[in-house]
Length: 375
Image (cartoon, rainbow, N blue to C red; front, side, top):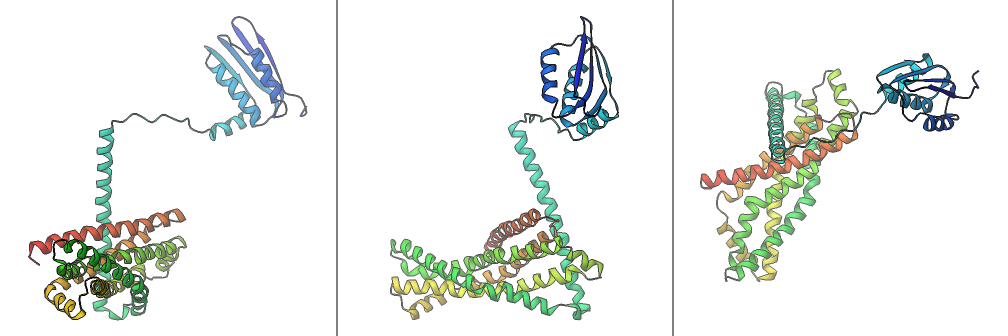
């Protein structure tokens, strides 16, 4: 009987319909069964009986047809349904993996949605700030422990980070600062020349480079290079479970992964800032020498007059703070990576974006603070 063709018998009158099915309800017979149903089952009466207990073999194609008849008959006033183990098993499987129906997106007030989004963003920012504070506390605690046990400080890893993030970043920082110095000098000479005050371009160049652009350019370049590197390196170690292995063998990932990068970047960024200041002014000086025929001696003399006692130190004071921001965010986002490449890319991107955003925010706060105290 396993080779029996699938069949469907329909007995009906004005008040009751009985559908009896049997044989093999498989893909090879399903076309004929569909034709039988479409031509015979047009409108079921109030009482419907489905008897599928005689089905000997059934696959998913037949099960879809059974479910279609079941759904149609279930809407009647009186309904009876008989099956066997084969039919019950495959219907249970289909129902288990049936996709959920798509629901239309509820209509939400535009203003309400925007206010809710702002609230969610605010809560996320507060939570992220709290996590950063805790993370900074852990770094501080690790640094404080070195006072009692200086032998635990990993000087070799710190020196390696100074080389990777400081020395290796010198060419790109110097080149960008040199070109920006040329741009600032050219634009300053062009605009101030209209007023007959092009000589004061030296003052503009010195203040702009030493107070703002030198540290900003260095910090942004380092955020792109080192911040992303920190997040990617530590995130890759999280994915490969190297961080978990450190915990297992009794090593502190904070001391091995975070503190050397934190200390190394705090040492490296002021050095890069100093070089950016030097080459930014050098680039502007070369342009003024060629454009305004300003002699090097006159340029240096005017530069020394324009640079006040705090002009240089304002930019240098910002360097360790910006370095700490980049290191903390890069290492924190790396430790938040979960076991997927998508998560690694997401947190690496967030490390760069958050670092640059906070660098600009803190630069604005520094400018306001120095303005208030008169520096």
